[in-house]
Length: 113
Image (cartoon, rainbow, N blue to C red):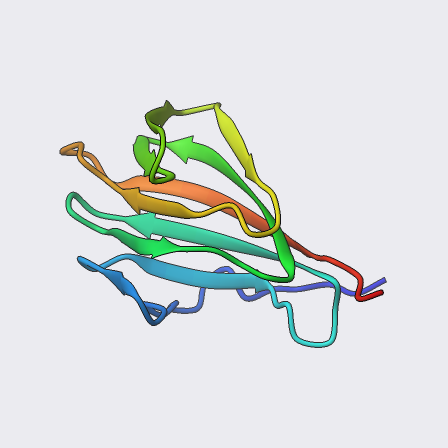
């Protein structure tokens, strides 16, 4: 068992993210096969189009709404909704709402063959 008590700390704006988006590692990926992050995006905050070679990511909207764009499809998730991005799935995020969006981002590393 490992207990994490970092919820009070200040997060960061990761590279290729913008508009004041802040990500806090609750359960860090370092040394593990998964991570849990709390992401807070004010109006206009988000992340540029990118994909992950070795991760599957789940975005669960805790509060507010967040718009996603895959390059082929654009959709907005509301509080209580989620999306899974498989390995190599491109995704762009943007908070187009007035209210800050809080999402839980769970990332799982894909085992190497």
